[in-house]
Amino acid sequence: MGMRRRAGVLSFVLGAFAGAAPALGAPALTPSSIVSPLRERVSEPTVAVSAEGRMLAAWDAVRGELEPDRYPSCGSTGTYGLVEARLGAVAHGWHGVQVLGVDGVGPVAAVGANGTAAVAWCSLAKPNVQSLYVSIARPGRPFGRAMRVPIDCFVPEGLKVQPDGRVVVICSKTLEYVLTPLKTRIEFALLSPHGGQPVIGPIATSSPGAGVSMAETEAGDVLVAFPPLAPQGVKYPQDVSQLTPAARAFAAAQAIEPSKAAFIRAAKVVAGPGGAALDFDASQEENEEDGMAEQLPDGMFGPSAPTIPLPSQSTGGQFTHEYGGPDIAFPAGGERVAIWDSILRLPAPPGPGEEGAVQSVTILAAVRPAGAGDFQAPVQLSVGPGLSGPPKITTAGGTTLALWVQDEPHCRQRVYAATGALGTAAAQVRAVSDSYTPAKGECGEGNGQLVLAGSGPNAIAGWMQGSALHIATETAATP
Image (cartoon, rainbow, N blue to C red; front, side, top):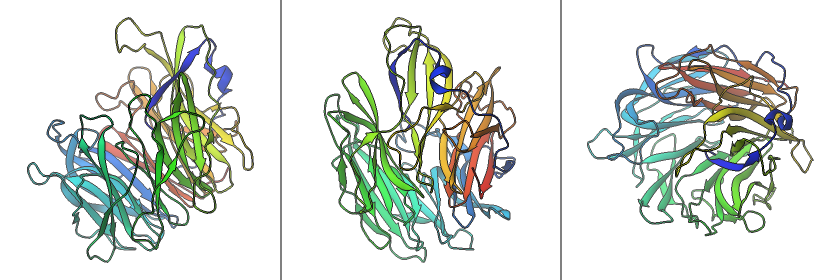
């Protein structure tokens, strides 16, 4: 969920609470291959895969650097270029590269159950004009001509393809940057793969924050959540809205509140073969809470409950402990798997806004067995000392797959994957990339621009190594 929180001061070694790391084993991921043109510098990768094995990778072939003051809402890496894509099949490999658009920023990708693929992006092709474009590839076909979507927002926040091939794109536009809370507008566009005018409309929300999370259930329902951004002490509910496969508009949002009197700070809607939920971070006075409101059989979201066991606070010691909000996976077996990164810092030096030096970053996972009410104690996944970036997690073949970048001495990095029974000592962990020097500015951050997606028995993982996009796939994974 992208946010760091301070949980307290630790006076003990983190490994004592996390348990020993799982033994190394052979991952189910295939050896990676480079899918971007070798002479291009690429950025902002995105990947998708269907249960039947149609896979998609897209990226920016960098042509220039964005001016943040001129384009404050476009992209995240500060670059723009040709939007390029490759289609393929897990069992047969990749087709050729297609150029979808020019001067594009922030592409997002999706592949539906029927094989329809789509890429959406923000285009800066005209001076001082930002436009939203979508390109669609029907089952077994390459991408067609890009369509400009007449929607009054510029950055695609999410993209899904429903079972019948309809493409759903979500956008948000910040209307006011100065006021607190921020004023935003959330809109959707519903496109047919056969062409014609898209259906466009607003999504009502009482949450005034910027940013959207999006997920799709096994039944094809598209879920959208709107993280609230509110002043300290002001309580807003978390809204979740739903679009069913047959509908032409999102249903009225359901307001979800954390337990007790806590305030939601960030939230993310997640889904998988085993269900869906709203996973959120909340705070109450000095305490932090991780909550999860799961979707019930009637489509509504039930009462929130704590997710993962976190370290308790202590009053002494030399380290400050922070953790990233966990990502949750929903395997078909009914268990729930959480993964997150845990940071140890030295005490902050004097001065406002100063942070202590990071000593280590550990990747942790915890599992809630099917039918159980609580998550079990976390297990460490990261291997050895060093720094790690925020992990990714998805489901494939009835199990889970996790991915993260781990820093090594002398500004080197390596991508690791964990497969099998994550959250237990039976999980298998192994490096899936060679040791490499990261891009400028990413040393010590464990970035790698990781991307990960899964559907049915298939998963697709990608990362930036140098200026090239590396892709590895997994199919029919078993614990």
